Image (tube, rainbow, N blue to C red; front, side):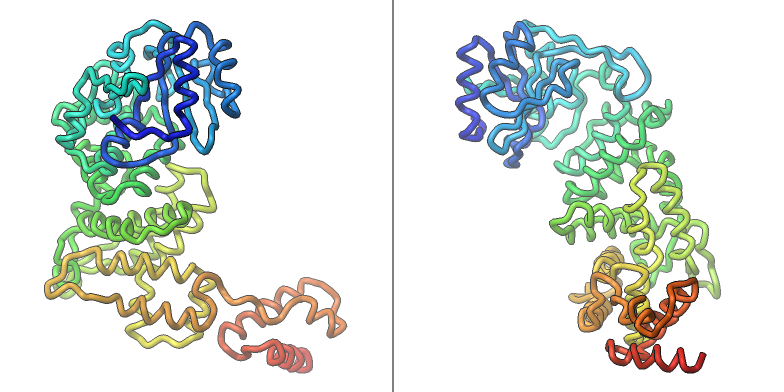
Length: 460
């Protein structure tokens, strides 16, 4: 047995009353078997004669969304649950890409035949809540127990290129070992250009699942590398061949460090998904320009200006997978400044340096990235217990009130108008100069700002 939400029982009984057999499928069953809970439920319905009849049965239980009706799917919002209902169906490849399928549904199709269209054996497990029995025609429960990721049918698997990236994120999310046959199949699909068939939105969705849901995203990234998929996400494939100074980076190459950094950041994920994807992408891309900046000087490996040059490289990389410009613009400053906290700490930076930094990047997020960068490596000696540079910067930025945002201007346009000035192009110049003076701590209060303005105007 698997636990079911108590509120779903009346719905199950209603379907049974109308001679429809519900079978829970997919992620809900898989997650329940490994102790995860979810409010998203997929139910295949056996014995459905028409979608119209199904709609009349479901309507009393909540709000119906027929957005997938053309594919035989009805979505129900019911007591905090999101339930997808569909008759058993088969799919056949008819066109290019992830959506190029013809879908046919059959009310009397048997579960084993319907399950054959699924991607992985762990997603092909069914559960009949009426008889409280599992339907497992391809051994998904055994594979889940043995932490094995395997395809259901190689012939149908290759029809959907998105399944390559699903394999990557599933392996990481559930700590699964990719079956050799699946690995070889995905490698062959990538070599034949399968990923090129996918729209960037679908690629990004799978990447987000990897970065936001996996305890160790490095598992998925390493699998993607084994599949030969890093070249699609170029220049990530070059990181492995970029060595680092063995004193500061005993772990060796940039790829190994990047994997460690990403896992460290995963351990520090917050309750805000938008903030998390920003931080995770910054961790993944923070050293993206090291392959083109690494040099040997006086026998020491170094990558001067890799953070600065990484901004444009990361911008191009991100633009290939997402149109979310605000996200891109949030990631880039973190890459540009990921080494700044340690630099400021080493040189005992002044408050004005921290104020200026706050106008370019969210300092709180920057500290998290710098901490992931610091601990995301091996150490020649004992692993430090603290990230002292981050603690110091956090304390100073918090005291200055700029931990999460830059200081608000103390001098505003209305102050210029109060001095009988008419709004003009000169306004901006004066206000910009005032803000620079504020960042330089030439004044710290409204009164001091007024005195600064009076002096400037008198001086002409």
